[in-house]
Length: 167
Image (cartoon, rainbow, N blue to C red; front, side, top):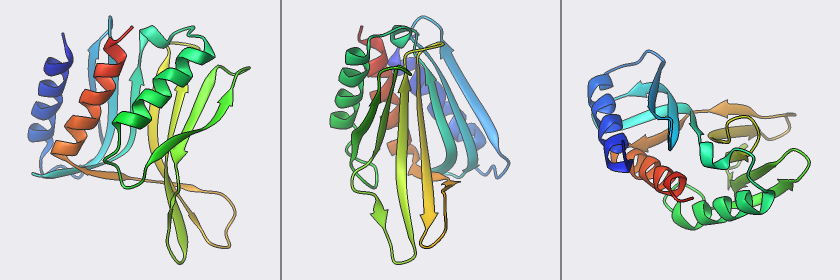
């Protein structure tokens, strides 16, 4: 399986799920390269809404923190089509992970929204993308769905898989 096949399979899943309002997890795997999991909330003919996109990447397993930083910086340079730019924010050497967030976040009058990506080299080696919102005057944050057109979703997955295929 290659990047094109994974994108093609995801495209087929988006077409199959069009009109679905029931939460559904789609899994597409090539264990040699990566395992993709997307938790869709709603899929229509042109767009989708999802809460979480995860990628298990064997080449990240036990990677040195410098490799995670290179991976993260490369992704930040590629993924320029989300609502906000993303940049590395924290490096956790002891935990072998890199935190990437929207820089700057989307600040509205009453709330702030931001993307959060976590790259980890422990366990299977993983990538996780989520979006959060925090309301002005309230403590904490809550997860919110990410909404993308099918075209942008496929580009995002292709960019992630292209990066995962590079050793």
